Length: 254
Image (cartoon, rainbow, N blue to C red; front, side):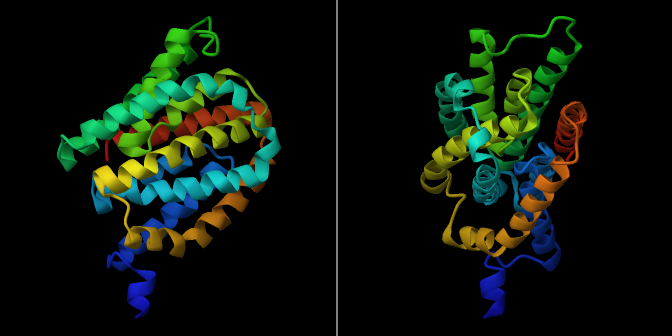
C-alpha cells in the first residue's frame, strides 16, 4: 500500500531519491538561484527517458513558479515579457509536432542541441563590446521567443534563453525573479494540455509523484530565497551566468 502511494511509478529507490533531489533543486532555482533546475533535466532524462522526463518535470516547474510568485509577486514586470509570448507559443506548437515525429534518443539529442543554442546566444551577447538591446531588437526578441518556446516544450530547457532576455534588462534581482516567474508560469500551464493529450507524458500516477515530492520543492524554495538575500546584485548576475553555462554543458554531455 505504501509503495503504491509514495512510489506510484514503481521505480527503484535510487531513482526515487534522485527525483526527490531534482524537486529540491527546482525549488531552489525558481525562488532565486536561476539555472540550478537545469541539472534536473539530464538526470531525469537518463532515468525516465527524454520524453517521459519532460512530463515529470513540468508540474514541478509550475509548483516552483507559484512559490516564486508567492515571494516576488509585486516585483514582477509583466510588460517586459508580453512581446515574447506569441513567439514562444508558436515555438511550443512546433515542438509539440516535432516531439511526435522522433524517437526518444533523438528527443534527448534535440534537448541537448536546444541548450547549446541557448548557451551560444548567451555567450554571444557577453563577448560583444556593444551589448545587444534585446528589448528593442524585434528580430532578436522573436528568435528568442521561438527558440525558447521550442526548447521549453522539448525539454523544459529554455532557461538560458529567457534568462538571457531578462538579464539584458538589468532589473534588480527581485524584479528579475518575479518577472521570470510570471512568464514561466504562463508558458508551463499552456504546455500542460499538449503533454496530456498529444504526448501522454502526464498521467495521474506522475502527478501523484509530483504531489508526494512537493515538500522537497517547498524546502528548496525557502532555501533559495534565503540564499539570494545574501548575494549582492553584481555577484548574483555572475552566478546566474555560471550556473547556466555549467548546466548547459552537463545537459549536452549527459
